[in-house]
Image (cartoon, rainbow, N blue to C red; front, side, top):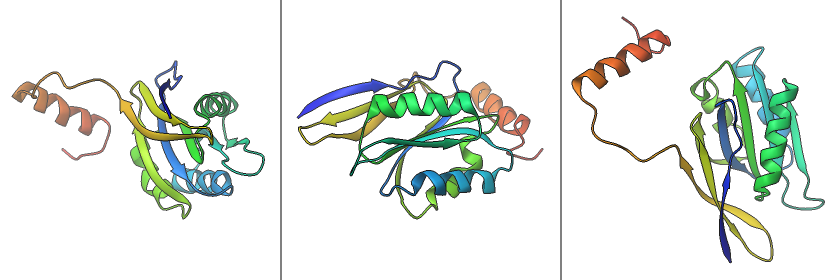
Length: 161
């Protein structure tokens, strides 16, 4: 077995969700979950099929985001993984809808941070062991940091007053 890291290419710092599923209908079901959760959502989705012809399956509402998802999925080539790039919305807006898709097994990350994926490769194929989402902690928040965090959540509309 060989361990590798695969950096997710995300030049615009878009929000993304990386997960694992178990069936080819993942592409259509996640697409439907996205448009039902956020009408007019802009996204691109790709799924690594892990049996039969082992293709990267894809869908989306934005061609550039779909191309980015396809490129990253092929780079990962990890069985039954999916990657979803979003524009003008946050993962928190769609995460429960994605987790409720019957064939979704797990979510590795939902972030706009730089992501490195830890992949194990054997003679059979590849699998995701985990992710490095962003950077290491640099300290404990101060009272000024708490104030900034609370202001940020209110500016985004996630908390009242």
